Length: 259
Image 1 (cartoon, helix red, strand yellow):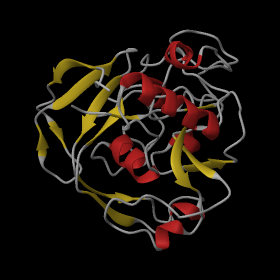
Image 2 (image 1 turned 45 degrees about the vertical axis):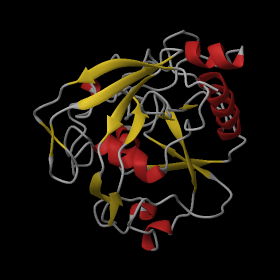
Image 3 (image 1 turned 30 degrees about the vertical axis):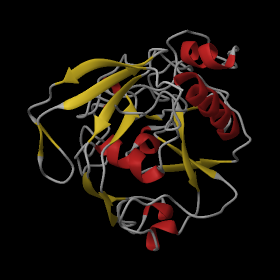
């Protein structure tokens, strides 16, 4: 089956640094047949998690080095209701809006969406990001609590959260992106990751391309949502939920297929 991809060109970011310290003088950007844009995230390494003494969440420790041997493409924005409906034929979201992130979708719903999207595009590479991929991309080379700094002082510029969202989601891409051009990595909707959740996984996580625990009961969610306080939209904050649960603050962002 022929791959259905549309290349939209390059996004030049000459001033950015990749997480391994090398200059990232361009980030390639691609768009698929239903208008989902993907940014190529460079290979590199970073320190995942936080020191327990700095924050209250014990499952964010210990900080550990993670290395990605290959670049990958991640959704520039959260999957929208319009994109979900184009594949699934229905829209389960509470807060309706074509350009709003889809919500009220479970981890299992996300797997079916991915399966059908792969069929439509004639590929096999669409999937949820691993938890490590998600945090690496969210940090975009930063080591601070948030990708804009160590405090929530400027949070309104970057994230929809409980203090500014007025009780609902907002259209994707309406706040400022992180350094790699990714929008809503903090707030709006929490994003499902592929991994099982284990509170002590960081103590044994491999350094090279970690894919999470082999088993578990709950699945990881990252980024926090419109319904969360600033502490919960930090880059290292770990959420988790039963893979069959649906609520109006959980959505998704995909790893895509790069040419």
